[in-house]
Image (cartoon, rainbow, N blue to C red; front, side):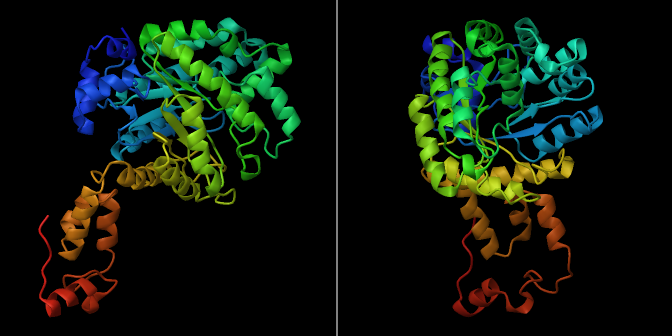
Length: 431
């Protein structure tokens, strides 16, 4: 049985127990919300991992890191380094988006070495292999697409992005909309090209039951991709985006009926005043299925710093209901990220997730912030390092300049904490 089928029968699986323990909630809470489709636990039956995580209602916001080769750049050792950097710095899941080199070999190595759930976008492999076989990638057959899906699920992939909502109706809406950036989703673009070339409906939408059968067989969580997501602020919350989201809401319910776990992906580029509205629309149309957002990025001119523009949007999205943040690295829109970009992307998204968790958790998430404040008051540098998102960076900055006293090199002899303790006579609270 899948996790959702077990939950509906009141069977609490080992994965549910692990999630409940990590989240400090009851087993019954996790079980009930998985049964209702409001929590997913990506856990392929062929991929045992120690880092199980739950995504959704009442749980901490999770962070995903994307790795993977491109047709121009990337090696297996390089991608494995990114995998380990992602996990070291706190990514809850990792997606392998490889489009270059030996895609099967890379994915299988990532699955073997990962201690966290792994996601993929199978349409990439299907189309790339079709191009090698036929010439034009759009010559891929429906069987080619589903062969790639089945192969990746059989290998142990825990969740897959599938752009089932890029329908002919959505394409018609796109043509009428006259967007600035049209389609920026690579998977969405692959399917759009295929549909226009063959003048047929999206094979993932038209053969959705076939997809559900595969997902149920391996208990793979479907991540319904946002192929029509806005790639610029000018296109935010427009008709193609909402047209696709309406279709995804229907597909969510069909997945639940089939005993398949499902979450929904969202934008993209959104101005600040659109974020809360987008979270509310998704939760309404998709019946509170977990929401997985890319950023969102709140400006289009942050190139080189888009981990920051995404973290701003991610914090607001999380505060208004997003459950899962896909990181964005400083290299977004520019190049394939390296290991340092991956690290910065993970930490930025973790900061955003934690900022939102503080107001979502009834104060539980803020306990660590209070401990950090007490350590600062005490000028306890070791504890501050241990509590920080990146202890190594903390220690490097601390050691940058020699200091004579207890304070840091910013204030030296004139540290406010030190002066107030001396003259007010109030010592710091103990952690």
